[in-house]
Length: 182
Ligand SMILES: [Fe+2]
Image 1 (cartoon, rainbow, N blue to C red):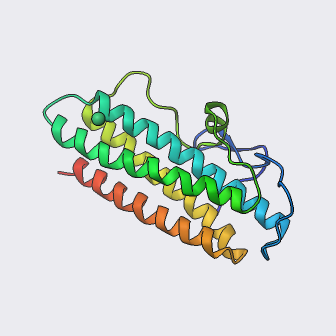
Image 2: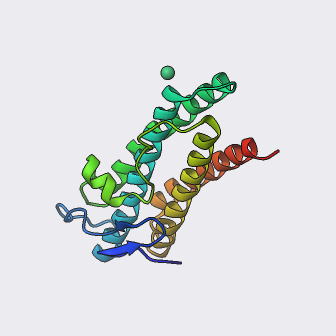
Image 3: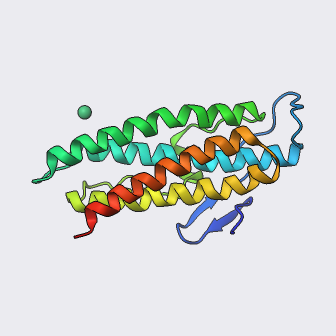
């Protein structure tokens, strides 16, 4: 599995990823080494940026979808963006619980996310479904990479959170994929 590290470039997306979003704050003595807490915070920061970017993309598509499937997709996208919006808070708060500041600016998210920015021009309805399908798969990959770090460090709360995020993104990807199939 490719490991995200400082100043590396994820060639599949051309984004810089990883590390040193912020310095550990205060004394944290929860049985996880400083090095592991830092790596966990990095993985969660990537997940936060991905999740926020997918949230914004999905809400944009809720507003801008057109065509014969308007009702179906408008409603489906609302369910999805609401779930994503509710997900960012526990991810950010887990970063804080392991002792690091949570990144939360458009500049930081652009740097940390593996997803492209929201399309400037609203795509056709089925292209929106394609964008969200690949977005959900990308977030699942990011969560799975972070999971390996959390599991190795015996960080059960982070592993639990990541398991839940993997479940929802893989399920959502399946639903979107099904729309695209005949
Ligand atoms: Fe709405």
